[in-house]
Image (tube, rainbow, N blue to C red):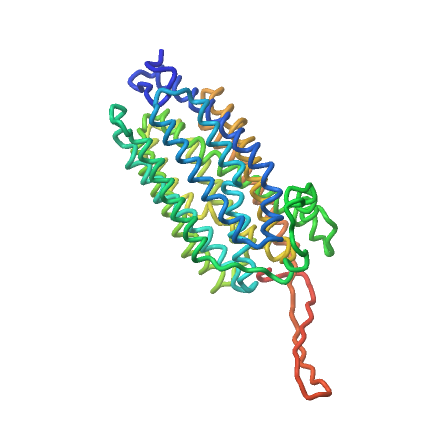
Length: 441
C-alpha cells in the first residue's frame, strides 16, 4: 500500500509496488487536470485569435501571464497545505484555461512577429521565437529540478510552495514588461473591422471567423493544403505529448530518479533549442533549403528518437540508449516552426492570429487525446515503450504529408514595374505569378 494515498508527493518509491501504484495514480490525475485545462482553453481559443486580429496583439498578450500569476499563487497555497486532496488543483487549471494559457501566448506573439516582419525574414523570426520556448524549457525544468531535488515537507514553506512563488514572480515580470515595453500596434487590416464593443466581445461570430479561416474556399487548392498542414501539425503534437507527458513516468520504470530525469530533459531541451536557433537558420539561409524539407528532417529525427527511446526499456544498457536519444532528437522541433512559417505565408495578414490560435486548439486536442490514449497504452501494457513506438508511427505519416506538400508546392515570382505619372511622380507596382516548383515558398 502507499504510505500516503491522499498525497502522491509523499508516496514511498522504496518498494516496487509503491512505485507502480504511485505512477499509475499520478498518470490518472494528469488525465483529469489535462482535461480540465483543455475544456476551458478550448472555449477561449476561438476568441483570443479573433481578438488579437481585431484589437491588436498587446492586450490579449497581457492576459496569459496575469492568469499564470493567479494560478501559481493558488498552487502555492495548495502546496502549503500539502496534505490537501489533489482535486483542488482543478482550480488553477480553470484559471489557466480561461486566461488563454499557451494558446494566448502563441496566437498573439506569433501574430505580432508576423505583422512586423517581411515574408523573407519571417521564418528566421519564427525560429527565434520558437527557440525561446526551448531556452525557457531548459532553464525551467532545471530550475524545477533544483527546487525539488531535496523536498522538505517539514518546512513551513516547503519546496513546492517556493517553486510556485518563483513562477508567480517570473510571470508578473513578464506582464510588467508587456505593459511598459511592448508597443501597441494596429495594422491596416485591423482598422477595417472598426471598433469592437463590449456587447460583441463574446459574440459567437468570433468562433465562426476562426473556423472560416481554416475551411473557407481559397484559390489554387490552398484550403486543402492548409488542412493537410494542420493534420501534420496534429500528428507532430502527438509526438510531443508522449515526450513531455510520459518521459518521466517511463524513466521511473527503469529506476531513474527525478534529478536524473531533469538532467536528461534539460540537456535534451538545450540541444534541441541550439539546433533550432543555430542550424535551422543556416539551412534556411545559405543552402536555401525549403521549410518543407527542414520539417521532414525534423520528423525523421522525431521518428528515430521515439523508436530508440521506447526500445530502451527492453535493453540492459537502457541508460546509454536513453542518452543517445539526445542526439537523435536534435532536429525534432523543426517541424512545428516550419509548418507555422508556411501557414503564415498562406493566409492573409488579418487571419494570422486566428490561424495560430487554431493550431493551439489542435495542440490542446492532441494533448488531451494523447494523454488519454497514450497513457492508457502505457499503463495497460507490459511493454511501456509501446506508446513511444505508436507516436513514432504518427510522425511517419506526418512525414508523408510534408513530402506531398513539398512536391506540390508553388513558386511565387514577383515582377516590379515602375510607372511615371503625368504630374512627374513615379510609383512602383508589383504583380505576383505562381508556378510549380518552389525553392522556398
